[in-house]
Image (cartoon, rainbow, N blue to C red; front, side, top):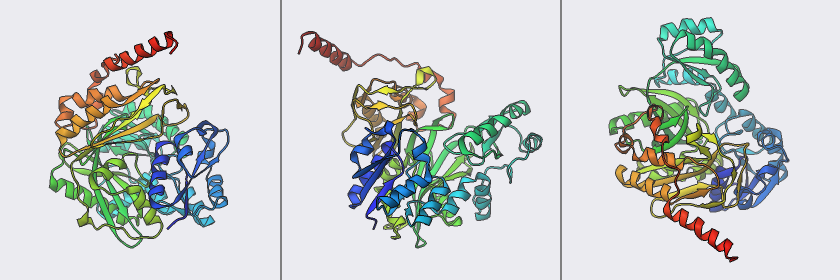
Length: 472
């Protein structure tokens, strides 16, 4: 087993990995920019090393990070998600310097990161893919011709895209003409590649994904599916495991497809195979994420498997500890991505100092976060503040527990998405477990919530004002 792991990330996912290292008796080494000097992952790690003043460049510098791992005696690097996690250059640099990369091989990262290559690999394996182009588009004229064959609406997608970026729906030739150069520009800026491809748009699908674990000994298992249909502009907001919308036969089929997909490309470590399900219940491969996902927490919650610990064990060459028939699912888990955004102001980022924070607790509640009272949210990174994860034996209880947990949390000084999620939880369609990716767009009235403080919050503010006035 490894002696020390460098965590090439920040924030709550770095804290999550540090906790896994602590439980496994492995030393952890954090990295940080000057902006992150007082972040929780820096405080919790056994060691921490500065990347300098630039808030972003250090986290994206492959050679500096690998060199730091070598210089500080680390055996392995865990990339978390975002930043370099799906950059094959990091895995390659680790191999050259004798450092273990906790993830799949550089070649698999590259193949799955190229959406057209991934589609070809899935077709060869017999996994259904969304109808679309076999190769990257060469010109707008070619795109217009292919769109006529596919029949509008179509989706323009960055070949190296991810995280919901570099995607545009086109409902007509005029929209395709308008969006073609935009997607190329977005792809170039975000991913460094100008390639784009086209798919038939699956209208109002359910977005389902399957967590897989594959070791170096030929063993592959799934940890059931997650429903990520509650999303805005292709960015996930609320995730659920397992999906409340699948019957057992469809569940078995979908999860089996994910294992086939992973084995077909020689995948190892933890990964996620993402699918779209159309209104007729047909499933199509969309992409494979070659890293731990933000929403891995709910798969852990329903199965009891520590995914980060399994990542580390697999990277160390150990076999999986579980057979598929030993993996059961119990109840329902829901994850709420608490973002520093103002839903009432078009989800504008809300950065600043957290004047008051305490998280929810009680049965079936977990919080993954890196914030604390007095912490200042920097404007340079993702707006994710915390992940509130709840579990209950049945769907109805899970929804009620989600309401209670969100009511319990106190996160003041900035705007967050918490009150918006409360409105979603109260909506009849969500409570029935009946929704697809159009839910947020078709229920714009949910942002009309009140910003009024709860009674106990008002009382606390008044008590503090009286105390200050009295000189207490």
